[in-house]
Amino acid sequence: MIVDKRNESYHSSANHSYPKSRLIQKVIDSISSTPFSFKAALNKHQNFNLNEDELTLLFANQNQFQINKIGIPIRVGEQYRDLYHKTKGIPDLHYSILEEGLNYEPVFIMEAKRLPSPSVNREKEYVVGKTPSGNPNGGIERFKYQKHGKGLSYCGILGYVERGNFEDWLDKINSWILELMPTWSEQEKLKFLEKESIQVLLSSKVLREDSSELNLYHFWIDIFRKK
Image 1 (cartoon, one colour):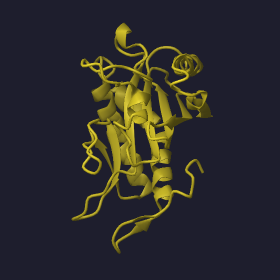
Image 2: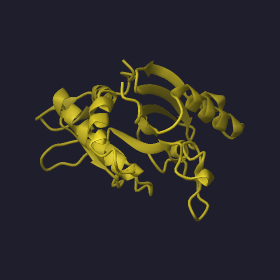
Image 3: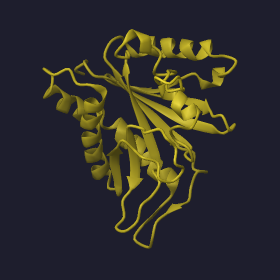
Image 4: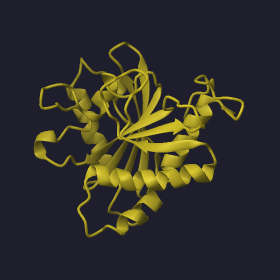
């Protein structure tokens, strides 16, 4: 299993009780099972130039279907507002257990990024970027500075590959990370875990500003390749 079983205890009321590691693993499995149905839904909109939010809406709907098939009471929600740690970042997707009359901190959150970025001046946005006011705002960077994922040990980035191949993007993104040394570490480079025709799963470690580590999974989908 991808998820370390030491990250356990996540209990609800007497209605159900799931180890946290099991919930996270099921979420990761559901995300990995979604690309083909996502591509089928995307083909219905092939004449439209969908933006990142619209792609993520299609993905969330298909991912929810996969969650339902697995049979765990998890909602795939969009645009998460952090009620627990009051962080200001708003990640694109969050996975939270559903129970009547109760609200839970997400077990997993995910940011979405297009590859390549939609404009040249945002080329390295998967890793680092800036808000108009100059604050750090890149994809991985948001997790590093805990704008996203505070209190969590496992999070993800969903990558929509619109041009180029997986290997080239891995080399390019890792080169951007190496450019940030010694502020960043070589440990933070991405590595392949699994590869299929239209998708890959990668992992990396994020060394956060409070010296804690985050396990970050990268789900890349080639949104133009058929099979």
